[in-house]
Image (cartoon, rainbow, N blue to C red; front, side):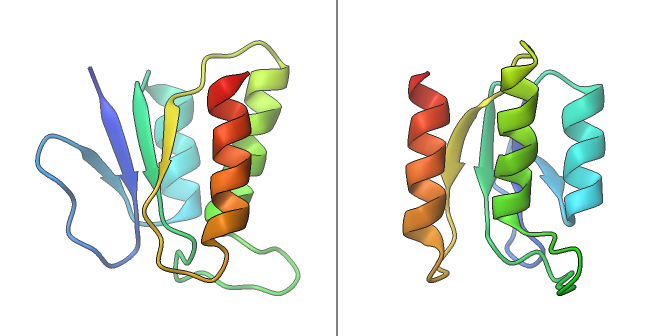
Length: 96
């Protein structure tokens, strides 16, 4: 069972793969089959024209699910003010 931890700063839990950026997370999710993913909000790549955050990873996962692809069970570990919004989306995707 493979797990993916997405965070630009925190140490990765033992036994999890790490993605430090949006691009790295999407690449790994596209190439590997993960059972679990844990997301931070801030990925250190803020761009006002093309935001790349934990929320945009959730948006990508939602599109994958709509297209019938497997998505991992989603945890949120961010301390950001966006946590509640991310949890609502994750809970919906985990439930459906």
